[in-house]
Amino acid sequence: MTYIDCPVREMVDIWESQGGQAWQLIEPVDGFHPNQIGNALIAEFVWNEFESKFPYLIPPLNPNNEAIKQIFGDQGGY
Image 1 (cartoon, rainbow, N blue to C red):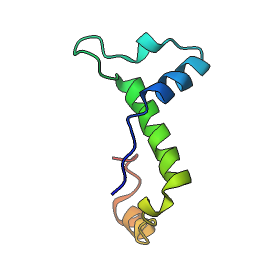
Image 2: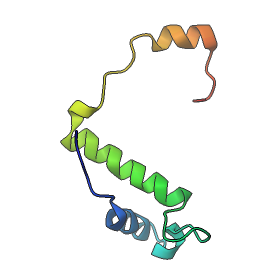
Image 3: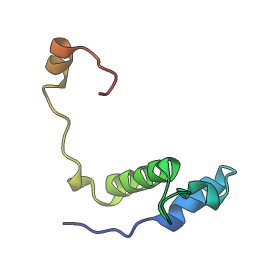
Image 4: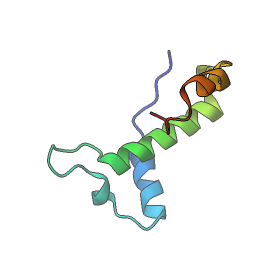
């Protein structure tokens, strides 16, 4: 089991480095929760943390992916 803090500061830093403002990452109708953009930035940060610090948490690719694609086709990630 691995724990990392929710990277709110990092999310804001990434967004601001791209010219955004912190308030743009907050969901306006349900309190202080990240909106869709904020969640995407959090996911990107956490994935990069896993790849660099905890690569053992990422399982290998499914060796059957090509066979599955042949059977079901490319469904666009759905």
